[in-house]
Amino acid sequence: LGNVSSVVWATTGPLAAEKEIVHIAGGAVDSLVYPPQPYLYRYLMSSRQSAEGSLQFALDQLGSTEPKISFLRYDSAGTDAYAEALVEALERIDLELAGDQQRFPAAATDLTPAASAIAAQNPNFVLSIMTDAQAPLGVEALRNRGYTGPIVNWVGISEKTLQAVNDPNFYVMRDTVPSELPESAHIKDLATELGKADKINHDFVVNGYLAALATTKALE
Image 1 (tube, rainbow, N blue to C red):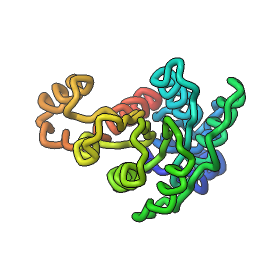
Image 2: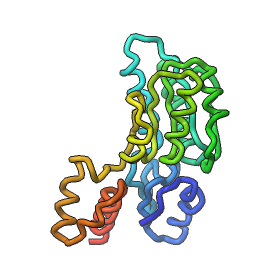
Image 3: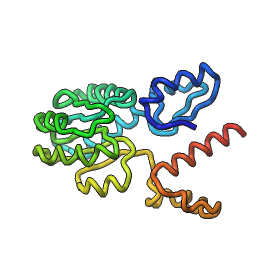
Image 4: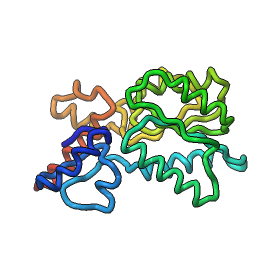
């Protein structure tokens, strides 16, 4: 069972087949798991699914309004795959981004330059990939520079981060199930039966459980 970031999996993923040791990963790069092949598996949605889902959400929200979409993201192998899929999805419907996508280092804590460039594009929708630490900073920077429209973000984003952002026009596409939400009730019940209720304390508990369950079934 592996770590989550595609930054790591871009380099360690090929070792799965080389060493013939099965891995089940969170953020394995799309090209390593599609089309399906032995040894390396992914239990979160693909970058392509995320890009196409985020774009469809944007188009649904905009309705008849002509889309003018900007894209803000940190650098990683996974976000590269998202960016590629997003551009392809836009091309299929004869659209393009409002301007150049704005990129920043994965460890960045100052998103002001990128947010300023996005606001200058005057979009009516922003797609973003920001971490839990970056989301409050990125949203604040966009708002301070005059962008008032919707933002839909992919990656993780916990309930605590949503509360910290505190913006009704900030949405997230995520494949974690926060323990506070009704969808994780069966995991809570199981944890209580096992005397592990105190372990249900963060957003990746459900995904970790599912990864372990899938591995156990495969071994059986």
